[in-house]
Length: 366
Length: 272
Ligand SMILES: Nc1ncnc2c1ncn2[C@@H]1O[C@H](COP(=O)(O)OP(=O)(O)OP(=O)(O)O)[C@@H](O)[C@H]1O
Ligand SMILES: [Mg+2]
View (cartoon, each protein chain N blue to C red):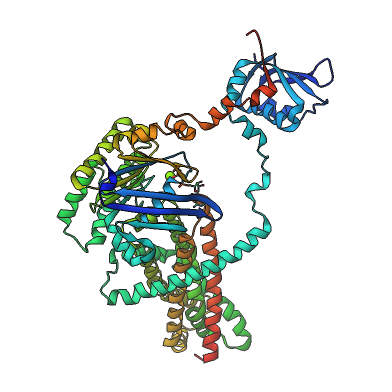
């Protein structure tokens, strides 16, 4: 029976012998054992067998002790094995640090900014190109890819209806409950309807739908585009003379900018419905009163502002996904990384732009 | 036959390319004549795919000049490039089929994009005849993920042939194929040249296939051209690394056999 190799001290100083089978497990154990002496002579005559990793231990010893080590009575098959390897290079190469895969902090920080600026430029260029493909190209008789667009609208819009509906209903309920419980202190609970409908139309519905779509479709689109880059599908399109941005990215962007406003309006309606139910059945507000208040409060501008926001959010989600997806580097781990980044970036941009719009409309008194 | 008696299809001079500060290709002079088949060989990672990418314009050389079919890529914008590329075809190392489309639509794509709404009856005939050429008839409705690696590669070739390109690039067409299919593919390549005068640049690891199909072979080592020429010229090349490469022996092994490194440390057991 073979057993892991052991090292045994020999007669003179620095004399050792290895016995048993020199495998990986033995190599790991032996490399922790101190070997002492000016000059090491290691007898391998009693070695019963070895594996590749075990033999690497011997090379490691050569690396550590340099010319002060010598192996005696080496089995012929071991030497034959070592002859197959570029032993001088292996021994002279520096050991790599464990930290190799973690890049130095300074370098990453710096290149992060450069990468950010480059991505931002790419994002803007893509936005301009999108405007061209969405507005100018059809006028010039270039083909809009209706088939692909419909597929994308299905995935981005139609499939999102249940989740958007459910979340909007719940938001409507939460809003109505909160509004009523505060407004009742001033005897103003009949304004619940105003608050719910305006808050939904102008702020909450566009933001909630955009966040849901960014999480659902923004991530999927980024992953899809990035995978296509990694598997050379984008290159293959280019070699066929097909502009991959026009072919792959534009239909997705058009679908997002078309689906989000529709989802947004749907969300407003369902949300108001949720508030309505709470008001009538839980808060016992009169049915007509609430209905009339809603109809009065909600103006066309509120809806239009919400729709405008939704269109912009749709473009932001699509452009972020496309920018990060097309700029992916580093194989399949890169795909995972850009997908996460795309979702977080889209959330961030949605909130930033929403704040900006709300402030703008406030300042302009819309 | 002398390739340079024919008009030149690819003229590259002093081509250099690097990723960041890693120099991948340097000082390459490449010429390919009309209807010639040039194979590029070299160890893994020596820059063969990179050279192909330069020649199809997927990457731009950082130094040197390159003309393909008489056109200088550096003077073309993206639209010019897309129009020009109808004259090229490329087979990618792993097929690079669009994963969301069935094989039929993958093949029909270049036709449908080149000519707006071509008659479907013609498209289906062209698609099927190209599939037949690579032995994939009957896979029309399958998705790329339902094919094996070698089948995907052949489907990629069929797709590259859709527009009857004047110039075809192959990235390791025979790797991962069984010997019979590989030989079939070589026959397809030679047939294409005979019938359509197609010029081809083939990256391959398959020495047998290289001897079969090529007029000239270019051996790339460490980002430079070690030697290029006909079979005799390659076989008579004195560069030991080239010899090692065509004789299938790893240079590392030859080195350590030559060096006395091991003898400094190991005393072989005597008597056994
Ligand atoms: N995107 C990239 N970023 C950085 N380096 C790269 C990239 N792609 C390739 N390289 C490097 O460029 C060199 C040449 O790569 P290339 O793909 O051209 O090799 P190859 O000769 O085709 O190899 P193989 O036979 O394995 O396909 C390799 O050393 C590789 O590490
Ligand atoms: Mg390659």
